[in-house]
Image 1 (cartoon, rainbow, N blue to C red):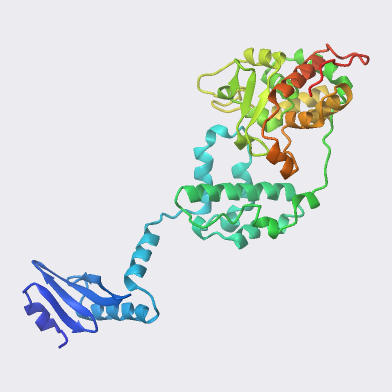
Image 2 (image 1 turned 180 degrees about the vertical axis):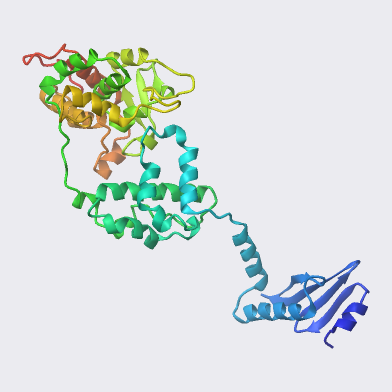
Length: 397
């Protein structure tokens, strides 16, 4: 016999009172609520539909009907209800919010004028910035990078990599459960042309290696952090961003080693740099600030020297020459003035081994062999090996 408002009001004895098709009014001491009884895989299940003071008879029947429709479709209504609660429990955040949070949380690793956030503001925020990070898929990522993939390939590769970084952060932070749609291998690599097939190699203007000793002598005469940063960059043959991002905590004077974290290297792997005596002496002579962890101090508190500072020094000394070009100067020196093996010179430049097979078998970083090479390079830059008829006897094998 179906329930009605009068019988419901009159019931006060604890128990379950049927309304039909598995719907019951459950009465306990001091409370009344609705439950739906059903069987699933031969087991009885009871699903709560709400307290009587919140859910009336008509609404209880509607909820019971919806649950029975799920059973008709082969679904367990209680399991579906629990799944919906789990989804609601997952916090949400937009891509723009996630990117800014990640950038802020890692503020100590960005050197001045780093374009991580700026590139996302320029190319990604207007298309996916408003989206929940959990909803972003491969098509959304392609909408950002594909239109400019050929025209601005180098920039779009960085943008895609930075989107992938933000989404990785979202995954480990619990905002996203899906796999990362912005990774290159197995995702974008299947949908976009390889960068190597698009980008035309542009060689940066480099100083002829034979002129390096005279240039370094003139550079040492200049005062200022900008000149010391350029001198250090040349002595270590590292990239501009790697040098400007250097922190005192990364330098080990006891072992004459500077370890660049993978977050600042092009290969995304940590790199140990062998520091020659001139490079160590340069570091010891630099000023320090308690509130600034950077080796090359910028004008603003807590920030590093800006990338334009070294460029400005070069413009005054040798217009047309680039900071990055000194890596080519170093490489030419290795080929012309030493017997060093090619893979050691490439390791000194922080280049990734192209062959996957070779990478698998070469686990070390050749630090001690690179140490000998960097000492010879520093001696050459200091003028000790400047004569055309002098060839360093030390050969790093």
